Image (cartoon, rainbow, N blue to C red; front, side, top):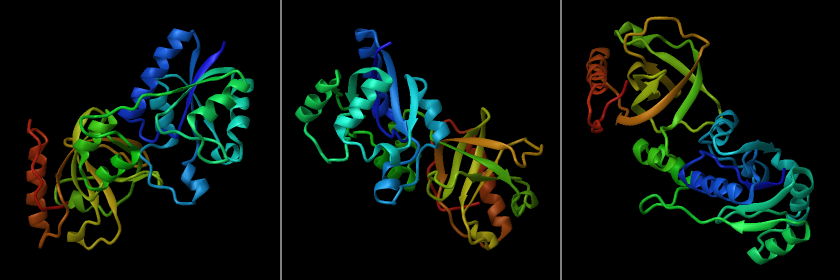
Length: 292
């Protein structure tokens, strides 16, 4: 069956990407072609400049999110990067039966560098493909981009990042042994170890959803207890089972407060109790200076 395809790294699969995929599905119905989404195993910058940004989505997360919109196929960017635009288009036409290519509003490809839309169209016509340039999408006054979302998360602005993502930012990781300080003060936590390439939001205390339940997560160095490296510790109210070596996924909803040093474990415990009480609050918690 002939296909219509779109190509990109699609980190985060945010609202701008979803707008592109809505155009893809509409055109697929119009042309009676199957929708294909081509993406890459690694960020292009990791090949081109060896300077890969922290990622909003792992390969597994991208595959799951993209699968809602079409058939997903991953390329090794290092293998396709040397191809010229004409060579890549010929590959799409011959191997994947692509007859229409929907290009993102700012997308470019081909080893020869930046080309005009007229050049892309001319090359595509040689191999039986019609190129369509997609319309851009704006979210309020902002145009969604993976870079903008990374910056928002690095600032701890979870709600703004979630609006551009179109879903709650998620962070998955294996539960590892920690120092058990939380257990000593009555708030046991699970220590999460995420994928090393995954973006971790700014230090602070956050309201998250874990397995459908509201929970607290602290991201930071735990300065009160003299820690020196960043940890991600989640407290699930009422849970007393064994989570070691299990995989947990945190869905971030709000940032409650920033991180700071407390003079004693008792002060820390009192602040965590106040954090705990925000879980049942129907309104957004206002940030104040504090930390687990």
